[in-house]
Length: 111
Image (cartoon, rainbow, N blue to C red; front, side):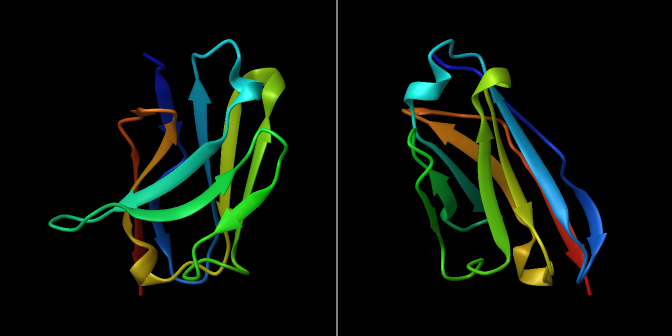
């Protein structure tokens, strides 16, 4: 099973930016698409963004125009930048690859 480790979360003010990182143990990382999700207590995970092996990207409506997903295959890492953060962006952000997901990194946006 692929190991995924996220980092970069924290407590930020509304309007600020964050860059989340997710590093995979999969040696063939470049062959696979990667996704970011976020989850809040009592709710289902919410899709945030995805990037294919060919670097095509897709975003949830809630972050379109504010988020950028990218990948660096040389270090097996996918990134998620979110600008103009809102309190509703608060949640546990985790990345997913195939049928694996990481433990997540908490993002809390204060108003």
